[in-house]
Length: 177
Image 1 (tube, rainbow, N blue to C red):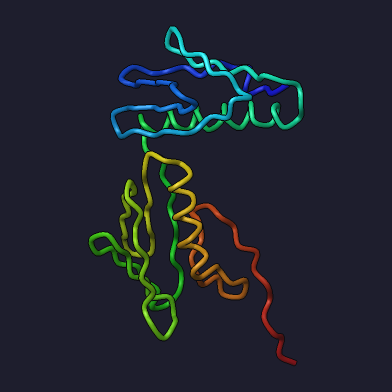
Image 2: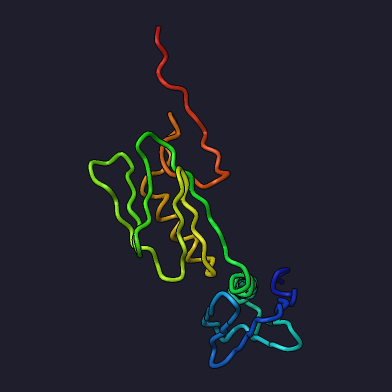
């Protein structure tokens, strides 16, 4: 039994939730999100809350129950308040610059690295940090991971791109005799 799936998901004011033809759509002040729901999970919307019930007894259906509950909760939260990920850039000469629909990063390579910013995300670049925000939690997290993967923090000097609050285990360098 899923502990997350049992709890009803409350729908705040100014938020519309609709379920039709196996697709759940959530519309709010920040935008609209939709997700296909498999037929093994029943969705019931009434009186300002969404309730999920499994149809079957397999472990896969039980796992889907909790997973869909989390997805729907994130969708409802996202259309009301944006999700934010903050990345820290450390290193001499390392910088990020946002231009239009793209971002250019100088990360110690012989060339600048350009990335296209997905629609629905807002990216701000300040000195030494990048702030990614949007109403789709998956898209925010995926883009942040993609940017971080360009230059992961190294353990000797800590240079690279890391999440805000991420702790990098530092290694000791060579010892001189």
